[in-house]
Each structure stands twice: as C-alpha cells, then as structure tokens.
Length: 249
Image (cartoon, rainbow, N blue to C red; front, side, top):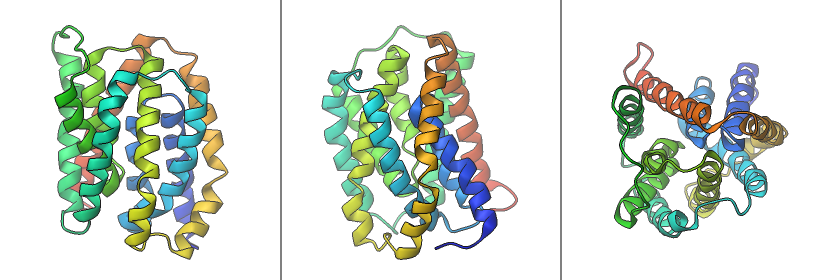
C-alpha cells in the first residue's frame, strides 16, 4: 500500500472531485483525478489506483440515474466504446501519455471556447458516424489516461439535451468503459496488491462524492449546469496543457 501521507492529501481531493463529477456535474471534470494523484505517484499507478474507485462510483451513479439516459445515443456509443478500449489495450505503452493529454486538451478547449465565443448553432441530432468516432476516442483516451470526458462531451453537448439525460447517458457510457478495462488492466499487471489496498483505503469516499454530486445536480437548472460543464472543459484543457508544457513537466 502507498504510505506517502501527501499522496492521500491529493488523493482525497481527487476522489471527491471525481465523485461529484460522476454524481451530477458532468463527468468531464473527472479527468483531474489522475493528474492530482500523479503529483505524488506515477500517472500509471495513479490510473490503476483510481480505476476500482471509478467502477464503484459508476455503479452508484447508474443506480441514481437509472432509465433516464438517451437510448439512441447509447446504441451507437457503447459498441464504439468497446472498440476504443481494445485499441487502448493493444497500443498500451506505444503512445505517449503527453501526446494523448495534448489531444484531449485541444478537444476540450475547442468546444469550450466555441461555446463562450461563438453564436450557438441549432441543436444537432444523434449521428451514428460521429457517435462511433467520438465514442471510440473517448474510450481510448479513458483507457490510456482516464481522460475520456472531453471527447464524449464534444459529441453530446451539441445535441442540447436536458441535463439529467446528458448526465445519465454519460454515466452509462463510462460504466461500460470502466468495467471493460478490468481484463486488460489485469493483463497489463495493474492489479497489484499495493494498488488495490490503496484503492480500498480511498473507497469510502466514493459514495460521499457521488452523493454530493447528485445533490448539486438537483439544485441547478439546465443553463447553470451546462455553464459548469463548459467551464470545466476549459479548465481541463488548460490543466492538461500545463501538465505537458508547464515548468514541472
């Protein structure tokens, strides 16, 4: 088990933020989990420690939003997510984590800045080709660096769906994505005793974070919710670029 006390300081903050995101404030900001924990351990170990916690959060969030998702989108996104996970598994170790972070950052910044600076276009319907691309890309970046939120939001946000439908659809998507990583992570040697014990110590924070997010979700209207999501995208993009190009990189 990790015994660095400063790791647990950052990990508690990370797990709570991720739980709040999954519970009700748009899953995209969950991308900060690995970078925060990676301040004290390697990004690979941070991702391995976080995955069991994400899986529990996904179960809790799925129960909270059961039946409120958009089925038309999920029929496209879920098969695509499995393709993205397979690609992530077979390319593990071949692609630069920093390159993936830059890609996700660009996606996040483009969609956030377009929201804040451009006239908003008419809502788009679910599109099978676009959904397949963004769903696979989201699962791929989630597998590699737990940064699947921005690509998924790049596809879902232009549809201008109700906030609860948006949240529920994201919850189902990442439930499938994260649980599909179990076998590949085991094959890659991520399920070590130290990592699992550390996950177990942090696990009690999972229901607390999801509960906090669910309470916040019920107390904001659609306009404020999507403003929060887009601000989150903007901050995520800046944070990921800082991780790659900042002074400490």
